[in-house]
Image (cartoon, rainbow, N blue to C red; front, side):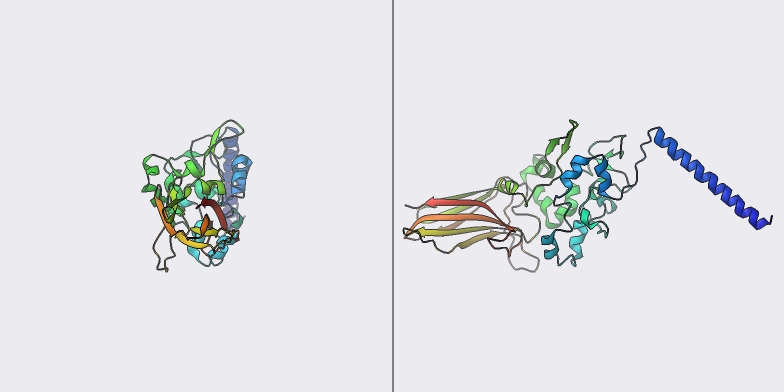
Length: 326
């Protein structure tokens, strides 16, 4: 046997022994209840043990963040890569809390997935509590706090708005409103992963009040941010809230709807000022009552984009008020 052949055989034998040892170590570790976490590559792996949470996330606006047709339209089909970074992000831990996320190119159907929030830079699962079972999560209160949300949601200053409000001082966080506590099938207490917000009518209506009263010859339309721990509306610059009013005469003939005011953060290239309504703030619009008016009708609309008309699915009628004037 030539020296070269002997060297090749020796390398093969050593490699085979090493592989066998690794295999035995892995098997014995599994048999002894090793907590070495597996490598996670998809949210679908989480469903095996966390079915309730997975089912809540499935269909949520986190899950459809990349495939949402409204988002694709407003982002120019994600040619605006700034949008893709938060709508299809890699694990936030890769760049760190409150730092710009990195976009991924895989699993577009998973949008903002479990791994984006729950995987740390070492590939470990992070949660509210540590455990030696299943995915072996480690507890990290800072990682699971407001700064995790702020990494993406403060792109439009939402968490800064929260920090400036009484909600931050009172310890009322993003999770308290958008991920309320729920009791799981096994009796444990967890957080709901549906993330109700601007696409949920009940949540929208809980954010503000709309009052319409007459004061002398004027109609006063007041909107107060009573329930949002941030500006109303917040997030993307295209979201808007509109106050509209019309008057009806004795013959029952209404005037055209008059647009009185818009709450919105403008796009960067727009000359308008930011008219979002901060937490606990109140805005009043006033309009003269026509002499022949017997009734006033007012509406408060929420728009997912500033071009949406009243009959557009992107518009939600939050409140409708009527005031008898005679």
